[in-house]
Each structure stands twice: as structure tokens, then as C-alpha cells.
Length: 411
Image (cartoon, rainbow, N blue to C red):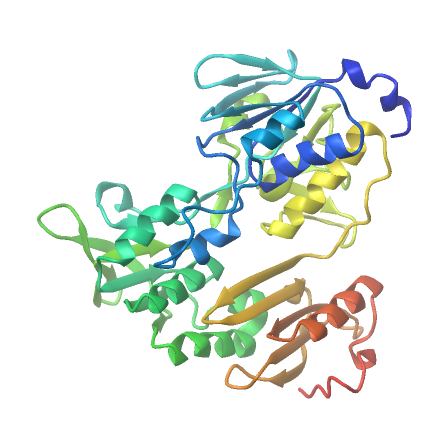
């Protein structure tokens, strides 16, 4: 530990709001870097902090684990000297008194605050009034859906992003009929373009999923017991459903900050070091952080598991006065129908410049470049070697033409 923060560590109290990856990893990183002051970790859910990626994968399997992997067991929290408050919801931040108020009226003081409250899934009108309609964000969601999948025959998934796609794959593995409703003409086109998005849609169809594209939700249909019975589309079609999963994205969990005066247009605005401007000692981390990204020079809010872990290390380094790790480019993966889909960089920042393989083949690689020919993003299906090469090229600003002959990429 180095710098002026080292000498006053014992007088610094750290309050972390949010007990998912960003919050837990920040607490662990602080201890690993030698911080020995008080750390309070507040989580809204009553479960021990857990990892979220398995919720839409392994946890949904018929013989899946009892729950997602634990990020922080009670014994580890004790060994690290953490004051962990579970089942506690933050409702307000007083930036002048430097306290956070909880739903039960307790005021938690801090000298350093880490906002790691993540995101909340978006829903649709009428969903709250019917049984059998879910979003998939929490362990309780996943465990309830696992039970439901053993009892239903027909599922409608609204949204063909990663959450919707992964749930569709899990439902098909359980033998359930699945329809996916997607407003875009091609799933994932806004991220990967129509050509690659269309290839990924083929993966659903090859596994017996019906994909309705260019389709817009109108309202839910119900049976006499107030349980969902179908999804009505704006073109008049009705898709029968015993179960509906809504996967239409998420919004930053910042409602509790509105009265604080913090800048929260689309997450908590922060600089490249994740510090909230104008509020000394206040940081944002993970999905909720709208960070001025040092690699791109623009504000970005990135909802990726790897991003949350990176943020934790940066915030911990800033608090103790260490040198922060180098910023990484965005990276996300998705497991669907036994295939691994990886995306690195920002494909939306460029155009598709090279393509090899396809979904019906052993692997698929798509590379995106900016107008100058520099690699800015890539998609790889079942090709980790190509993914690593593209990741290095993006970090280095290398040209797509210099990726190497082993790719044999053609447009």
C-alpha cells in the first residue's frame, strides 16, 4: 500500500452498497491490498452473496445445483472482518452528512462509499398482476423458474438478448416448447449487425425454437385463475403460453439516489477512476457505473461480469492509494445449446470486415473494424484462440489485415 491514504487507513470507513460481484470483489480486494479499516457490505437480498451468470444456465437445469455459487460465505466474511448486512435495502444518500439511510430507518455513516447496486430488469405492462410471468435476475427467480419448467409445456420468451436466449436454451434442454418474440427484424442486430445476428438466430431454430422477429408485444392473456395463458402481439397473433419470461434489458438501480443530487442519467456518472465528480470518496462500480472509459474516451455503462470484477480492483486501488490496473476492453460470454458465444470490444463501433465459419460449422468468427481498419470488436463461437487474438488486437489498436493467415478470414 502506498501514498497518503496508507497512513490514515485506520480512520477510513468503507461502506459498500450492493452485494453482488462488484461489491463483494471490492471488499475482498481492499483486504488483499492491506486495508484494515471497517468495511460494511449491504445487500438487498437475504441470500449469501452469489454469482449471477449461472442463474440463466446451470441453475435452471433439472438436476442443477441447489443455488448459484456463493461469492462470499459467512465464514469468509468473518475471516475478512466484514460487517455484512443482508436483506437490507438502501433508500437514500445524504451527501452532506455522508450517510446512507436504509428502509428500516438506520443511518450508515461512511468516509468512503462504493455504489454497486447493479441493475433492475425491465418488465411489461400487466406482468405484475398475473402468475407465471417472470424476469430472470435473482436466485429466487431462477429457482422458481426451475420448478416451473418441470410443470409446463409451452414457454414464450420476450426478448432475444443473452438472458432470453440462455433461458430459451435451458427450457429446450428440459423438453419444453419455446417461442421467442423479438422486436428487431434480426436478433442482436443492434449489437452485431444483421448478418451475424441472423447466424445466431439460426442456433435457436436449429434447436427447435420458433423465433418471431419484427414482433411487438401488445398484452398478456390470462386464464380464469389469473395465470398467464398467452401473449398477444400487435399484429393480432396470440402465442399460447404456460409460462412467460421477459428479457428486454435492464435499467440502473439508482432510484434511491434521485434525492441525493448525484448525476444519474443512465447509471451513476463517474470518471475513469470510478470516482463520482464533486463527491470526494464516493465511487461507483459494476453495472450501475456510467464510467468515462479510458480506452474509448466516452461514457459507457457496461453490464458484464468481467467489468464488475475489473471495477472492484480499480476502486480498491484508489481507496488505498495503489496504482490501478490497466483498463480492459469489454468482454462477455454466453452459453447456449452447448455452444460458447464470446464477444469482445465494441462491434457497434465498427463494421463487419471479416467472417469465417458459421453456426452449422465447428466455429464462427466475426471481426469488426473502424473506418481506418483497426479492430474494434469480435464475436467468436467455440473458438477461444481466435477470441484471444482479437482481444489483443483491440487493445493494441491493430489492423484487421494483420490478424494473421491462420484466420483465413473473408468478407
